[in-house]
Length: 119
Image 1 (cartoon, rainbow, N blue to C red):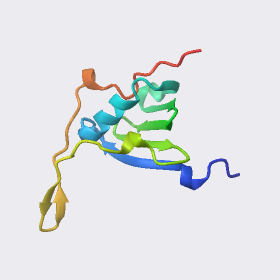
Image 2 (cartoon, helix red, strand yellow; image 1 turned 30 degrees about the vertical axis):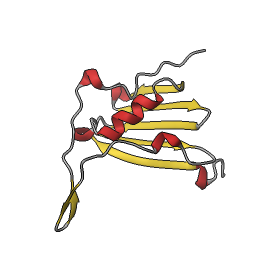
Image 3 (cartoon, rainbow, N blue to C red; image 1 turned 90 degrees about the vertical axis):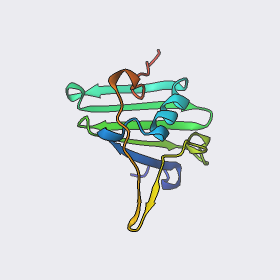
């Protein structure tokens, strides 16, 4: 069964627990904070979380697996401004490629799964 054309599915990035304070992840969470929350799920005693939010721009989704990995993306028929103009992550060039320092997140600063589904 084919429900969603592949071109409409947007996978933005993934973040390990020690990088949940990544400036881009924080900015995305801030940008969608006021979007309509259509789903906000926590199951398996908090080891799996999912949220979906919607605006005129499209749908935003986020998944958290095993309190260790977060994936962020969207669903839209066109490019989403949500993922444009995000803060610099501080990449540094190295002889082998590039690297950057991971940014941890304290529990009080975690707003990604703070949405409330309204009737």
